[in-house]
Image (cartoon, rainbow, N blue to C red):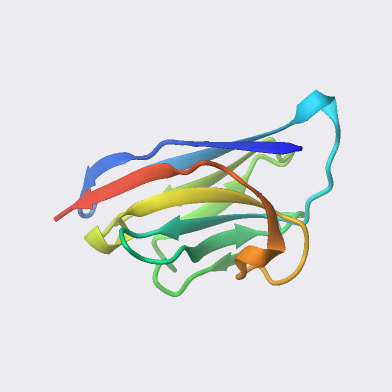
Amino acid sequence: QVQLVESGGGLVQAGGSLRLSCAASTASGGTFTHYGMGWFRAPPGKEREFVAAISRSGANRYYADSVKGRFTISGDGAWKSVYLQMDNLKPEDTALYYCAWRSGGSYYLETSYDYWGQGTQVTVSS
C-alpha cells in the first residue's frame, strides 16, 4: 500500500505563488514500482481534472493547457516527494489539489493512477 500526503496549500492573493509537496511512503517497508506521479485538482462544484504529471525518469513533464507556463512539477529523484510550484496564481486555480501515483496508461487520465492523497486546499483571492 502506498500512502501519499500533500501539504503546502493555503490562501493566497491573485498573482501570488504556492509550492505544494507530496510525500510518498509504503506501508510495511514494501517497495512499489510506479511510472510517474501526477497532480490533479477538484475546483468547487466541479469534477476532478488533470493538472500536471512527471515521468518516472523525470525527463518528461505534462501540463494542462490552463497551467502551462505558470506551474512546474518536479520530483526529488528518489521519488519520496513530488512538488508543484504554482506561480501567477489566478482565482480559477482555487481547488482541492491531489497527488497521485501512476501505474500505467495515459498521464492525463485518473484511471492511470492507483494511489491518491487526501488533498490540500488552495484558495486564490481576487
